[in-house]
Length: 161
Figure (tube, rainbow, N blue to C red):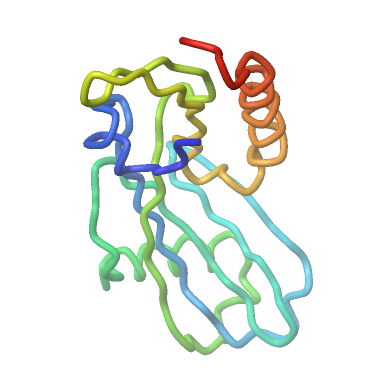
């Protein structure tokens, strides 16, 4: 199974996988109880409430490998968030977070026969879901498991690729 994400660029020479940076702001806002999401011009804005805090996002910056939060990006997130949910105006910023997700169009979920050091290697790829990984993982994980099971059923102690 190959679920290496961004490292698939080097491991299996896949130039189609690239980074998508996302950034969030953590705010104390116990009065915000609803999940809110809107997106225009590829700039998502959303609120994810949890107890007395809310995570506000976000960004999808293509090609950015940095996991450092950017102050300008934070200001932009807060500006958009407060325009969308005016009740956020009085919330206190508690922290910030930035991370990178592997994106590929489309995500790669398939079998591939590789040749490594003169030997055949059966690989099932499952990566490139970008910011939708948690959502898509249920379906692509099952599909990848089916692909692995297909190949496993073909293998016998004396089977040759």
